[in-house]
Amino acid sequence: MGQHENTGGVMTFWKHLEELRSHLLRSGIAVMVFGLLAFINKDFLFSRVILAPKEPFFFTNRLFCYLAERFSTPALCINSTPLEIINIDMAGQFTTHVMISITAGIILAIPYLVWEIWRFIKPGLTKKELAASKGAVVVISGLFLSGVLFAYFFIVPLSINFLGGYQVSAMVENQIALRSYISLVTTLSLATGLVFELPVFVYFLSRAGILTPKALRKNRKIAAILLVTLSAIITPPDVISQILVSIPLYLLYEVSIKVADRVERNKLRE
Image (cartoon, rainbow, N blue to C red; front, side, top):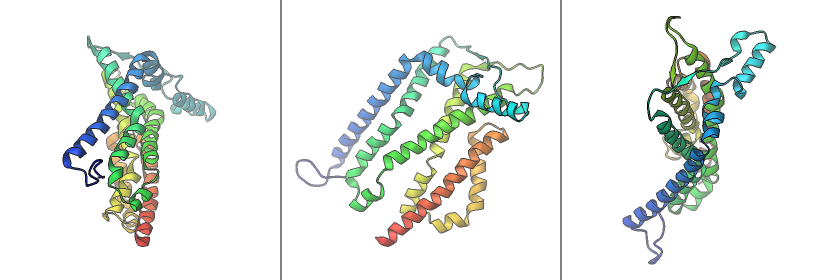
């Protein structure tokens, strides 16, 4: 993983652990700093970000309601009435504040966290591997944040509209707990962010010789079924949300084929 600073030899196991500890410490500090900023800006974090998708003023809700009016299709209008959120735990709002601040800290620090991981593994890479992985930090961070934003602006408001208004009977009124709402928003956002890393996973599997572009092309239909299934797992049980997730995932699969093609061409040059 690199050269020993004093002897010029290979780094020892304990030196690796010391190096890893330094990277983890800096990463932890970055999460704490961003988390503290999120904690301090409580009103913006909750009123303008976390709770916003349930409100009529949210961008996506206004867009769908505009389309509903434009095409005379009232069913398209979502979250026109704000969803009421309740808290039933004495310390519920405080613990939620802390949890969301930490989650926000992790999401905001993602580019730095990926960079720290890159710095740790970089000394162990060859010149060819370094050249092949150029821009990895930007790509990995960009894909994750794109997935989070996609979930936040599209999947979350649609899920709130479907689940928040769903009733088995008019005799049963929905009273949504704060913790349940927060869990929906964070789970969908983080899960979609991870799923958007598909091209990165394919890149490493292709480098290891486990996947080939030929195999990816041959199994397009199977992949489509698996991606739809995955979409059904990470989204609520409504068709629109599942379709919204399935489409970008399939596009990412096609991108992954291109990535595998490039890896194969580079291997042939080597």
